[in-house]
Image 1 (cartoon, rainbow, N blue to C red):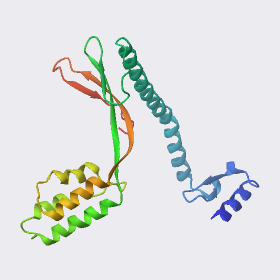
Image 2: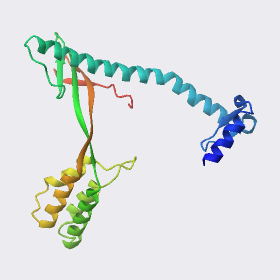
Image 3: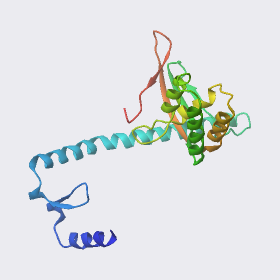
Image 4: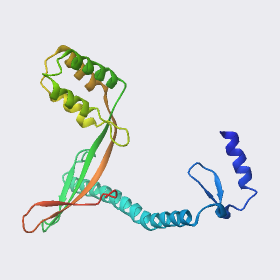
Length: 213
């Protein structure tokens, strides 16, 4: 693979790259060999990204500044009492008129290690030993808990929800122990959420600042 990359680099140094486009496989394709519709589609995609990306980057930057500003304000407030606040924990501040609210929240990103496979094996053994007719609902719950999303990830919340089931079977209890032991905190992330109070109902409505929306 490195030899091919080196050859492509040497070729690129001897040709006019403005007359080529790189395809999804990394191959240089002459413009004259690309259909006009494919070129137009490529131009449109790049134009849209060029227009939207600065706004996405600006929103991300604004969120990070908001988190930093809220943390700084908390420290300023705590200084008046001669204490230094912890940098952990959630913070909520509200405007003087009570119409706007900013919430900075911390969330742990959790992941399972290899012991999740042991827990799943124990659970499968339980389901095999128990009669399917009397535990059919449980089988569905377990299967759904281990379903993966479109990115191939297992839902931590769904898997951990199995521990809330009141099952005294010794093997099941070992499986639940394995689940707990396999869970680790990968990282802790901070999020900022903005709320606006509905003047008619008095309820707080989340302002959508999700760039994926």
